Amino acid sequence: MRRLNVELAARSYPILIGRGLLGRAELLLDHLRSPRVALVSNVTVAPIYGNAFIKALEGVGVGVTAIILPDGEVYKTWESLNRIHDSLLAARCDRATTVVAIGGGVIGDLAGFAAATYQRGVPFIQIPTTLLSQVDSSVGGKTGINHARGKNMVGAFWQPQMVLADTDTLQTLPPRELSAGLAEVIKYGLIRDLPFLDWLETHMDGLMARDGDLLAEAVERSCANKAEVVAADEFETAKDGGRALLNLGHTFGHAIETGMGYGEWLHGEAVAAGTVMAAELSRRLGWIGQADVARIVVLLKRAELPVRGPELGADRYLELMSHDKKVIAGSLRLVLLRRLGDAVTSADAPREEIVAAIEACSHA
Ligand code: NAD
Ligand code: GLY
Image (cartoon, rainbow, N blue to C red; front, top):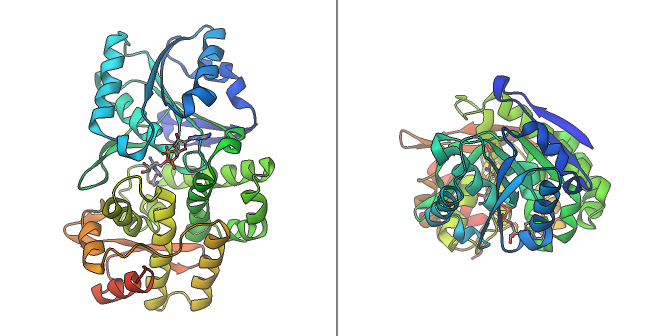
């Protein structure tokens, strides 16, 4: 088992990564305030992992209230949040009850927001079962739901007590979901870890073949990057860079997700196409070269990710991007690449260059 720590003073917590960890429910015991949990999952993950994990928890003396939601990004809504709150109240869960999320990023974000808001906040544990959630969404405390006008527009920062990532769960992921997770893995290499980018280029075939050791290493190196960034800028308030850099490709990507209708493009797929747009814009600003853009495109293609966005029209992209959470005082800050392995936030990209990058990287 590999162990990392997210250093946030009194709210620090461990990330445990390894194979077979779902069989070790006792790992949670030191992180529970009382022997009572509300386990939130969905109709896909509960039969594969959730039900067995409930039995394992009961086996170590923990009482479980199971809350099973429908599956999909379209359910990352106010209604699902209400449903969790209703179930917590119906089961008389108290302030010492820990909400445990077992599933992908949708379940983690929803359950985390429910934990942040139920009785003004109860403890929370993340058990991510997709690659994307193991390398990104389970770490760092961003929780929330979507709004018809924009992704993740309602939510809270609420750090978990621990993250338990069993990398064996990645063996049952649909291929499209594995690829979507790799988009966020590649992101760490591009924004701050050039040796990791080189490593990914060497091992992409093994990762796509789901080599267990390679997947565990990719999760660990991604989480190590994320933990460092979050520890330095937990609430994304740094003026330049900081946590906002984790959003490389996301402003374009969120426009794709919202513009196409939630669930049509997977989050990671939209991030992949958005990353190419951000790279192309960086090239147009003279920061990176054509060969760098090509290197990014080749790696994303090897991960079977889309490298062009849908044809929404540049005006529609810009309209959707204007709702981004990185817009401050009307000014859109984009994450761009100064070099491979070195990202910056910039509010200075001329509109015509943004339009040109979108048009060059979306389907005609
Ligand atoms: P997801 O939660 O929809 O899961 C993808 C699919 O895989 C679902 O159908 C799910 O039921 C299924 N699944 C999950 N684990 C499985 C397994 N082991 N085997 C088989 N099927 C499995 O999608 P995701 O990519 O995990 O998460 C995307 C969400 O995460 C988006 O809503 C995005 O906004 C959010 N996100 C949040 C953060 C954050 O910091 N909080 C960061 C990145 C993304
Ligand atoms: N996924 C971006 C962040 O956690 O900040």
